[in-house]
Image (tube, rainbow, N blue to C red; front, side, top):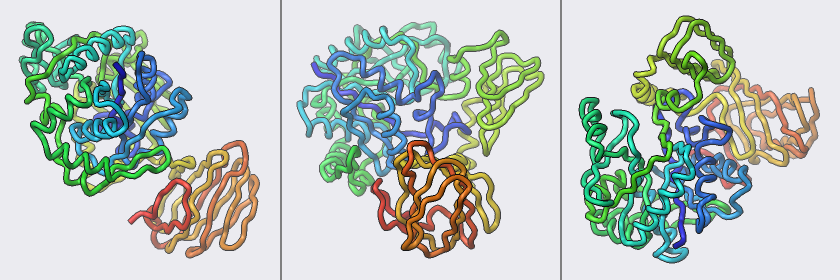
Length: 470
């Protein structure tokens, strides 16, 4: 029976702030090993027998990073990247993928739904669990994967198991005393958020309990548009779609829910504590990454992204440094990081949304310094890539090439700039930057003007299909 992988790559992972941001979420970060969590998920499904080209559901804003990471693997000449114009949680995302799969092939294909931000260390056991889940799905079940618990955990929902493979109940995140009872009982499993069911069974049951989700997501898929590698779901219908998780919309209501017991080395890395528990530790129980110096530190997580971090005399503490933020907290308070993110978002601060380094389809830029009427950036353009033909109303730009060769369109002139050469672009002038070489182009950009926001841009031509911000 063909397996259609559906990888859910939305979400922000707010409890892994300041490393994870709204535009750079945890599934795109290499937290464990050399691959990002999205890439690791793709590699796992690529090993499954009978696996079809994967369907990846991602947010519009993360489309280029997701595309780049998929193609970096060199393992998927075919894949489907569905773009959500708005977030409506997992019921809508899975329904969109199911409708998309139905329109492309057999309704009897088995959807294997996997979040992109999980770690699974026992791939052999994972393959065996998938085989069993596919078997149950083929028999008309809506199958979920229950993780055999290792400890009482208050950060996960639970699945109460009934006779055989049946699900007796879905339970919300418990308090510690209840979690200890669940662990001792033996009939309760962690709810992993992974599922398996045929396209036909899923849509039939969802139509029974949440018909509006099926109606609006069917419209969104049907009215969607192909854009190269991307398939853009239609916005208006998706905005009308009810939000909510697939657990609440369907799994808690259906009488066809089955569960596979899975002991697969699973973690959703939902917090810094979860990463500390999973990662390799030094002789003092510390998890360290980056340029770090420790003196008399035990059972801590210290991560440096942009500068030296030194720690003395810490116990059970996490310190996470990025170029624009530092988080310090007890490891056992890691679930509360999301409260900081909510406050940052409420205050309208950029630190919840982006890093100082922002990735674009052509490369990246890093904000080095910002003042009242000036901003300094380091811009990196990939070989063969170019930015849009654009104009700014309120800022002038000075470009100085640090490395590589730049092709610059400045008004009606096209010039070539080499290392240590520069140009000046006045406000209101049409311009474009390109890298015609074979090595990355690096330059320093100095912006001067009365308004320096990223929305001061008019695009006349863009090979990536972007429009000027509104």
